[in-house]
Image (cartoon, rainbow, N blue to C red; front, side):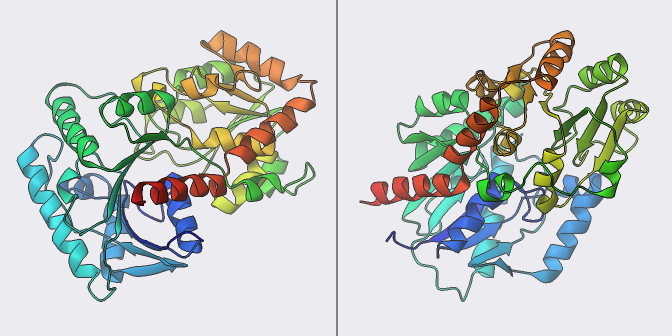
Length: 390
């Protein structure tokens, strides 16, 4: 039996946001008997002023205090931090000191000795060694410098290099990210996104779907995930205009884009486009099952190059045909999905996917999903941790 640990997880999201690798990993560590203290997204004063949703959620969390949210998992919310952590190392030092003081205060009484420090934020190198931890881990699920320029890019690069040089273990999501971090710290391991295979594969083709889906005609072409600046809206508008007989379904939040965003409004103006908003995580498998083709329509930029999309593995678990932008991770599975590098090729590949006749592809996709279940990922994580502690 593996040893049990206390994990101090410094997240880049709040617990109640759309579930990603952070919640998936930490909730499962809790179920295995480890105690997990999930420190939610750090928010600067500028974020509270700019985003009413963040402000509302943070006020609620401050009123609740430390909260036991699931088996062996507690969530902790930080106070507002000073703006400019990615423009000044001095400001960042102050913010990390505030973080350290606040977390220590909230965890008083839990008798935490020699925890494992699990970090998602590139600026949190100053926290290493502050909690008497026996191991520090950087789970790098984003390239934070991607899409940045000038001073911000320089500061983030400096902060992350300090972090990478000081942590004991790095888990990197995508192959390009893995290569980048491995060049600095040899204790870097590839940890791609995963899937709750049990939940996503248990549905049959005759699942009941919600009323709002029964009114949407086939073929249904869909995307499930954040509908924001990383999505190629021009591509989606092209597809909707070219094939008015296809139904395009979009599930997910548009945050941080405002409701009156021009790209969202234009997409919503098409009669064959259905922007259905956020749905409970429990409904997502049934929604994917109701689609004929699943999309990963990302803008081809630096951020996309480093992405390990969670939805790729969830689509695989349901066995659906997938048409994807040229992401490095999608290209790893080019034998079981369809790749497109232009609006025209997206159109052609969707048509090919709709007429897919090879039934074995469905099972091949499910096999890939099984091999990337979150349970297997947790086995891998525990093995790496125990190996390092030996």
